[in-house]
Amino acid sequence: MRTIIGFLLALCWSSLAFGQAAVQQSGIRFDAASNVGFVQAAVGSQSVLTITPPGGQYVYLTAIGIDVCQNATSTAISNGNVTSSGIVGTPSWSFSAPATANTCAFGVGGVGPVGYGYPATTVAERFALPLKSAAPGTAVVLTSPTTTNVQYTLRAYYYFAP
View 1 (cartoon, helix red, strand yellow):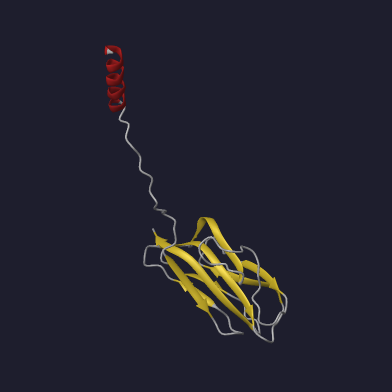
View 2 (cartoon, rainbow, N blue to C red; view 1 turned 45 degrees about the horizontal axis):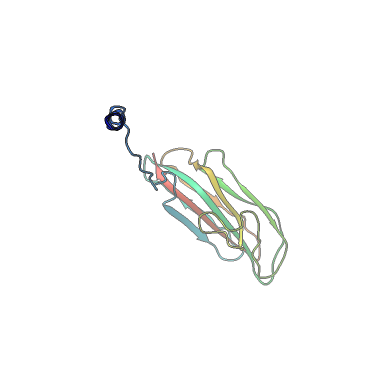
C-alpha cells in the first residue's frame, strides 16, 4: 500500500516539476476575413471593387467570388479576365461562357468555402495564404471586363493588418 501511495505522490510531483499545463484550443483564426467587399454594376458595364485600408495597414484577401450572368439577349465570353491592382503579383482570374440567355456561368469552386459560390458563381477561390497588398495604405482594386448583355458581380473577403 505504501508503495502505491509513494508512486502516486511521485507521479503528481513529477508533473508539477516539469510544468505541465493544460492547453485550451482557440477557435480564433488570425487570417479570417472580417470584411466583405461587394460590387455589382449594371448589365453591360464594368464592375470595379476598391478596398482601401487605413494608413499603415495592408489589405489581406482571403477569398474572392465572381459571378458572370447574362441577360435575355446574351453574349458569348471568350477568355474574360477580372484583373487586380495593388496586390503583390497582380493576379487575374479568367473564364469563358457560352451565349446562354438568362443564365449565370457555372465554373470553378462550386459551393464556396466561405458562404458564397452557389451554382451562379463562375469563380470561387479561397486562398491557402492570404494575398497581400503591395504596400501599406495602398488600395486593392478588382476590375471586371465590360461585356454587352453581361452583368459582373465581384466579392472579396478580406481583413486589414500591419
